[in-house]
Length: 205
Length: 246
Ligand code: HEM
Image (tube, rainbow over all chains, first blue to last red; front, side):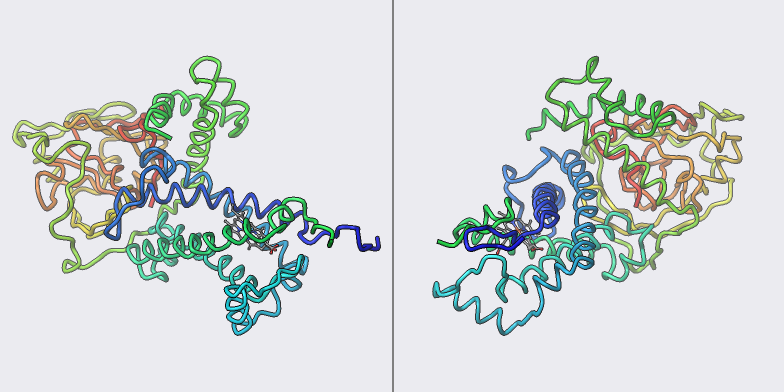
């Protein structure tokens, strides 16, 4: 099929779109129930506002957390396997350039960054790889505090139970920080949100 | 989601658990099978609760599969012990049961050959061992403590408990109750603890197993029973995951 000027082309493969939205759901459940679990024994001197948490009380929050973790892990694994095997990661995320990412951020702040459909800019590439790593760290540190006896090697590698709890918290914080910017841009840059559902870029006018 | 939802979750948990156990033997964990029950006990808007309960039962199975009966929990030095050790119960510290050690008798029931009650001095006459391990609470905090008592495996063998049974249950003087799976009961670090920092942590007898969360370590134990019928527990019936392994 030859894409004509008015023929919209697929910029997000179906597999990526499905796993992206499943992941978004799983992350929201994990974060909001995680905040309720945190409140049961806050590590730092604050609590999350109850109305922004999921589960009602500790048992409900834990039930959500330990249910959605399977969705997060299995879906994440599928996404990673697809991204690596299909060449999607290589095509969409490489090459990465930290310098380019900084330049893009400054351009974006001055309103000069052009979003080309189907091509991630340097800042997107770096932040997507970073958030994927943050989710992996969240899963590993989550396993370490869920099973500090059975998976004690993992727990020890993260500095022990109490340290792993903090690693888990900061992985969440990194994901949430990413999401604030990510969602902010997704709803403000014209056309990109719809494309993440349909897969197709709007035909250029 | 407000507390009432979670209360509903807890109210149906025992029924679900019983039904699910029966079904699981025949056809595995199927949500379709669980929804058959919805006509009689569950409300229409409880689909999410049922899904969460089913996944909690699934997590019981995954944790049982992950449990390595010979894997030991890390131990610590005396210098690492947490002082003061946090007091934690469903009631306040002033409401702990006061038990007279002289007249205390541990009751036994269920699938046990010799159900004769035990006095404290008889329990103390059995071989004692101690451990310094980390107690991890379901709330997230943890503390390192020192416990000393009878290896639970030794005790279960001694009383002729059916070691092929599925559950060991505990009834406590503070109206608390809980239960654990037999493989965890037989783990080398599972202790029937007689000595610990202070009476408020469960005098005269408590269970200590570092392979499970704190709430699976019942205090002020009055009776131990062995059974194949899911006994649940105080927090478990309110919605905490039953296996809750560490
Ligand atoms: C409501 C929440 C979310 C919205 C609205 C959203 C929106 C989007 C959009 C529009 C894109 C495409 C960007 C473009 O075409 O330039 C995208 C890609 C992406 N998003 Fe999200 N997202 C959400 C949640 C998440 C979450 C929770 C994560 C990870 C924790 C995430 C990670 C990613 C990644 C890694 C990509 C690149 C996907 C690929 O091509 O492999 N997103 N998102």
